[in-house]
Image (cartoon, rainbow, N blue to C red; front, side, top):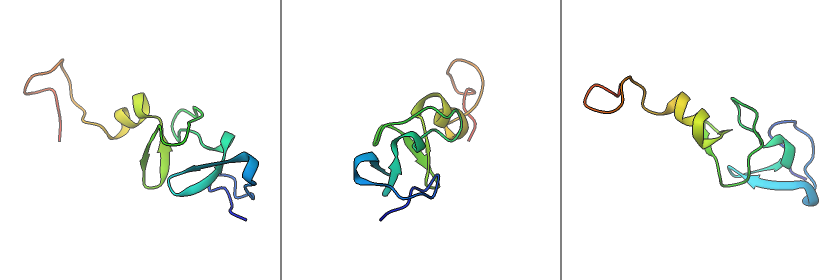
Length: 76
């Protein structure tokens, strides 16, 4: 029986959500930053951890900078 990567308890078929190549309990598949419950396939991942696309993943790992566009608005 597979174990949930978040709570390390067994995941039964009726409660299983498969994402990032692992089986999760539905309530355990949450954004690592804001704890929003995610659905399989509709989120981003970094180092095997799930994040909601917007705003968490974008804020943490997207291009940063200042301004509203133009050449000086992004940092690399």
